[in-house]
Length: 325
Image (cartoon, rainbow, N blue to C red; front, top):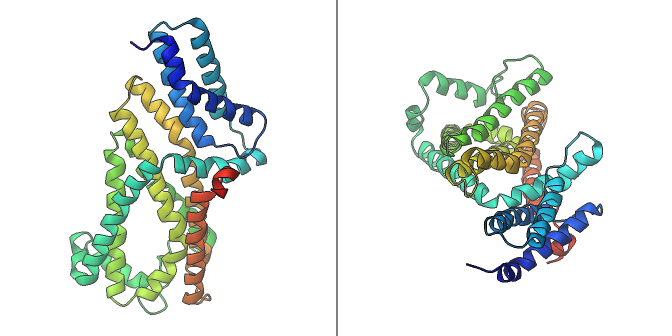
């Protein structure tokens, strides 16, 4: 078995790195690396459990207890709605949490995008293919929504005003995001199902409408808000896969404790995804169906929104030295 001295020598660098980050965080630094702090915290918790199980000297366990307690206070400090905390969440915590979950994000993106592209191609090659997924009444409904003529505004009108549509889209978007996240509790299978299902549906409808000649109405309507909506769906699915991983591989924790830990770990991503879905609903209600805006202008704004979302999640909240590198 590893001696206490060997154990301390093996992990001293990890503990020193955690201590440096804690000093920065407790000193009020705004741009410390929160994702690294969370990772080092989890490793130090494992080291503390090992130290206790192996009855290492008290000074060693006390040091690890002190480090993990300080890290826990920083990571799980109460979150209010003060403007400063909201700013920190938007500018630092959320993009850092997304990058910390990049593995789940890649899997979720593949589960969503690959079926979407495959069904878009299949429906584009054969318009009748969509009838394998939707009935004829639903297909006629999409033709009416995106076809030529005064009714082809790109959407149904279950409400009379844009504000009512805004409320409708929020409820619809949040419902999809919640399904993709919460279904992850079933070992991740539920999240995978909803990601694949939504990808199939969107791809089939998109390919069908394009091959039917409704490309301009359809694409000019969905291009802008999809930057926020599709990204949020993938993020919610990634958070659900994090839950599923906790259930399947609890490690040294009990399954329930692992699930609780996974939920705390993913909750920042879920909050951020919900915020993106609200933004998507606002864009969809007030911009996407605006007939007075030329399609070329919508495409330009959509490209800017996609670049904004990708750049924000990839770079925002990185420490200054990481940005320079």
